[in-house]
Each structure stands twice: as C-alpha cells, then as structure tokens.
Image 1 (spheres, one colour):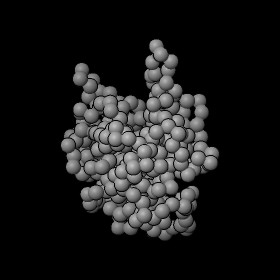
Image 2 (image 1 turned 30 degrees about the vertical axis):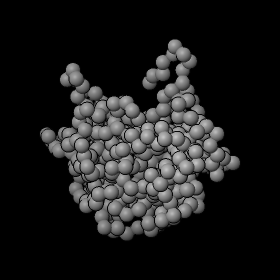
Image 3 (image 1 turned 90 degrees about the horizontal axis):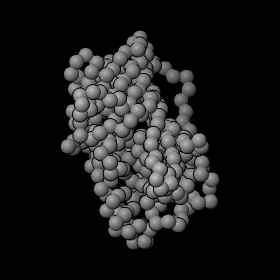
Image 4 (image 1 turned 90 degrees about the vertical axis):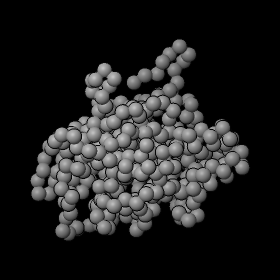
Length: 329
C-alpha cells in the first residue's frame, strides 16, 4: 500500500512509451472492487509527463473514462506522441489493465497538451470564487465536521463509520478543511438524515456551491508530482455533487459515474507554479443536467488568489430501476 500520494501515482517505464503503475490503484467513496477514477487519471497524467522535457508544462488533459479500474492489479499506460515542437507537445495516453484471461481492457484514454514557458504575457487575470466563505483557519477538518454533525444529530454513528471506511485514502494522503458555508459540509456530502436544511436551500441548483481547502500531507518535490497530485484531487466529488446539492439521497441513483473529463491548468509548474504543499481553495458547482447526464465544474485557486485550474465533467445519472430491472451502462 502506498503511503504518499507520490508513491501511489508513480510509474515505471517497462518498454519505450509503455509505463506501469508501481502500486495498485485504490478505491475511494465506494465499496466495490473499483479504483477511484482520479487515481487512474492522475497515473495517466504522470505517465504523459514522463515523455516530455521538464520545461514543458501541462495545460490541458481531456478524455473519457471507459470503465472502472480494478484495485487488485496495476495500471498500464501506453503513450503516443502526436506532436513535439519547440513550443507545444501533445500526447495520447491509453490506460488499461490485464484481465484474468490475459487480455487487455481499456479503462481511460486521454490527450495531454503541454506548452513551454512564454517569455512574456500580455494579459493576466482570474475570475474570483462565486461564494464568500470562511478562511482556512476558520474551517473545520473533515473529522471535526463529522463530530459536529454527530452532536447535532444530523448523522449517526453508523454514518460516521461508513464515511471513515469509504474515505480512508483521502485521510491518508490529503489534509482538507471544509468551508462551513458549503452544502457538502452541512449535509455530510449527501449522507445526512433526510430533511437536513442547509444555508443554500433558497438558491437554485446551479447557484449552489461546495468548497474546501486542501493540501498534501507528504511533501512534493517536482512540478510533475504537483501536477499529477492536482489531477488526483480534481476528480473528487464531481459526479455526485448534483445529487448532494439537490438534496437527493445518493441511494436514489441507480447509476452515477463520470463519463468524461477536461482538466485545464492555468498556472505553470516550477517555483511559482502549482503548489500542493500549500493550501489551495476549491469550489464546485453544477451547471446543467438532463437526458440522464449532468455537467459539473470544479475550480481551484492558490493562496495568491490565482485560478490554478478547473475540471469539467459530464456524468451519467440514472434513477434506480423498478424491482426486477437492472441499471447498466
């Protein structure tokens, strides 16, 4: 078992442009034998980073989740170079696992685009967060919030036990502080008792926000480590956020999972770049939903107020089937 996020996302090159994860991917937020999608995505990003010069910075990684990865075997990343110029590089990454019958099964494919540092920039600006929230020092840890909800009767001991089991990976790798104004903080990410009231109940669904502060627990050294860890974090909570913000129980969904992703990084690596050793602020909101899908965005700012990145995803969201039916992809 990996003890740091760097270890969990590390890869080794076993043949030219073919990388294998050192550790098995791990689960988070579910009880099935399925890896957390952000783990698979971050390993893919790390593999792509190994194939470009260190002065190339990731600015976009987009693709599709083709199926869940399993937690009892490694990930294989096959990287193809689509272009490498003096200024830009593009890589295509296919992530797969070897099945018990020896056949390969695709889990994810992604294009990753890189850009060298420009000597000058014409415009520099950032959109601020939508909601005004408490500063990091006034925001509780996940465990502190859990105890507060227990005391208020919003959740019970069984809820707390399940939560700790489902999010052991997050607790091991990340330090988070939950903004008190956040919907997910107040309703325990949708697991609170039915009828729980939040301070954003008067807002339309697309105006509600959930937010937190995060940083890694173990020091990161290289720009590649920071960017891979950022990809890991950015997948968290997006697919089920529409349920949480609508006050719909997670148990009412038959199928709920991310379909695609677009991670865009606006700050380069290096000394003044992406830094997950320091606190970063994340805000998530859902934009639209219909036709059995939802579209949700997560944005991150650093301590300087710069927007570091955003992640947008479409997710499948189906209601539970009637008795005798079976939800499937």
